[in-house]
Image (cartoon, rainbow, N blue to C red; front, side, top):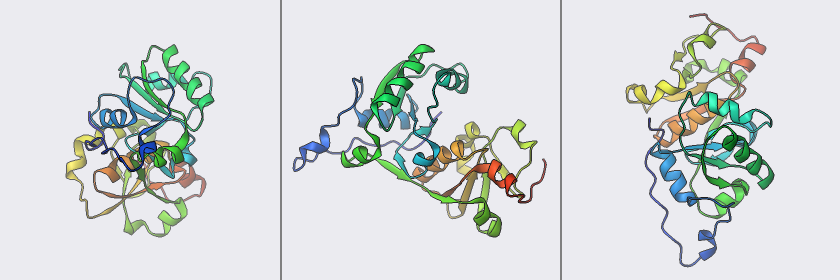
Length: 231
């Protein structure tokens, strides 16, 4: 399964050699190759920062899976549904990066790349980033006709309620139907909490779509008592 377009390795900048001297923990891949392989589906690149941090600028091709401590690796393993792809990690500091690495290796996953210096150092190194707009649930409720809404939750989650008019496309099925979407339309992407939708919005942005991530997801939508329907 492919999540994103191929990214070529950035050309070296002879006038600024520090751009090529990226200081990661001991890894098997360069940052450029890690992003390239993530886009080609050869590895999974996880941004382990909080959803709030990820909602700003994030590394290209990275999915958000915030690190929270014990059993985090087991949760990643369950999300992979039996697959054992090589893993890449992006973190804001070395302590979290090392803890996340240990968690993944503890469940039998191979970690081939780790970045532990945060987003500012990533940008300063000239590495590719993605930035996606956010929309709050109140803003969305006031302007529903502006967006085509895509709900990327799983079918069992829809029983709790969906936004009226939303298209129900589980996250893992979206690559199969992306060609049926109109790139001239603005899209609002929603999940339960705003984490999965942030990853999907970043990926769709790389495909040329105009997208916004619904902050707080359906949890916030329902807490605000905005209208829902049940499929």
